[in-house]
Image 1 (cartoon, rainbow over the protein chains, first blue to last red):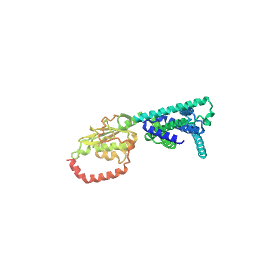
Image 2 (tube, chains in turn cyan, red):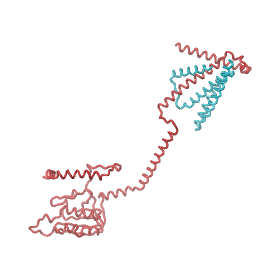
Image 3 (spheres, rainbow over the protein chains, first blue to last red):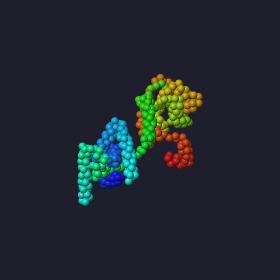
Image 4 (cartoon, each protein chain N blue to C red):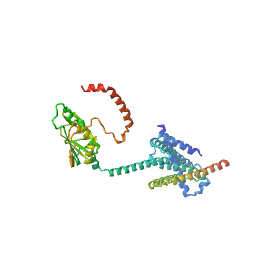
Length: 114
Length: 304
């Protein structure tokens, strides 16, 4: 269960180290948001799987929708001089901890039932 | 090549799983959604592994790229860790700016109060390069006029350069503002010296009669010369020289006509000015000692 994201992250790190790219400095804050969105998606997907209603297309669509919305917020906040992206950061973080707690509970229940 | 083939295989596998998950979803979407929870449809569906795995891979890559950028930024950009640090710097610069602005203001005021023409004029007057006009005294000084007796030394009865110098000195001391002798304007560097029967004033040879014109308060100038025990009594009467003092309402003094060339002296900027009192004492004392010791030999050497 927890092996999938660990393997995925280490694979991604390996690929990233092989690739010579880096993020342009002006897009730095957007990437940070994208990272948050990805973490949120990972935990959300795991929770959905544990609850038994993981749907791949929904996962993909919600992931991109969230990421695009967050980046758009950051962009407009930048243009308006307000740090709206903080809202996205807070929302993602709250969801992240929510999902984490749910995952934890599911895992505990599953362990007990065994 | 093996690596590329493997990756193509993995990609193929992944896409097939994606499609499978997608169709799974569409089928279920139009069917009963609750079927998921009962577990009938979901068996053997590993689409979540693909999704979460792909997201995790993306996360890993993004992390690496972001980390790289962050490291570069920290290496190449100056470090201001906190806002307060920047604030401190800003404050410092602001106080600097304020200081400079007040300085600028005072300098502007100085410029406003500064009248260039006036300063040039006063400096020209002090340097003696402009003709001047004003009230003053005109003094005529001549050698003795009666025929000398055979036992009298004629050398004693002519005007000497030191007498002229004393006269001019007396005039300056009495507050003369400008002095000219026979049309030669006296400036700061004008020296007097003996040149046979004539007197060298600056670079001009002058012969008697000497007409000295001095601008200043006529009464004071005249009184300064005629004071008992003063110039006339000590320098003129004993040698029976001729002297006439005329008070004039309007005297014309010509400008200094020589050049002023400075080969040795340099102007010291205002900020480098030194207080020379103590230095002067020390060095002058040493010089005086040296010159006192070698005075005899120097005189022998230089004046054969």
